[in-house]
Length: 121
Image (cartoon, rainbow, N blue to C red; front, side):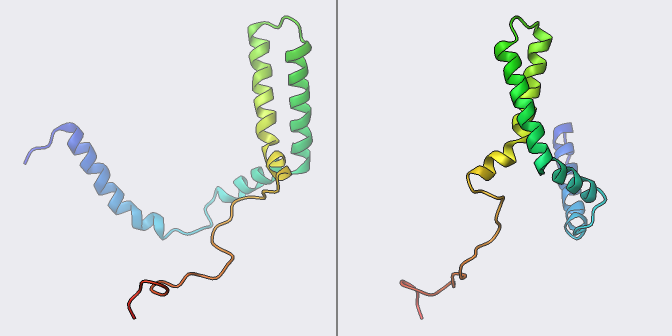
């Protein structure tokens, strides 16, 4: 049986997926980049980041509203600062609505399978 190139590449990816999946699944936690990523997360979700985001949004908004005629580069730069400020302040904005983050699992009692109306036994 002869494969053409796209079929051979697809087959190679499938075989690679089956051979790598057990190694990836068994690796667990403690990866080397988790510590620095957690530090970055703490840095951009703290109160200082909220004040920086507020200042960035205020300055960028003021420049866009009252800046007069800005050249194209300055206008794009202000848009980038405005979006960065909004992204940094997103956790504080979400916190205003009472949300604190993702919840995995249920807090209530588990539902038993095979009980209730319509089951046999």
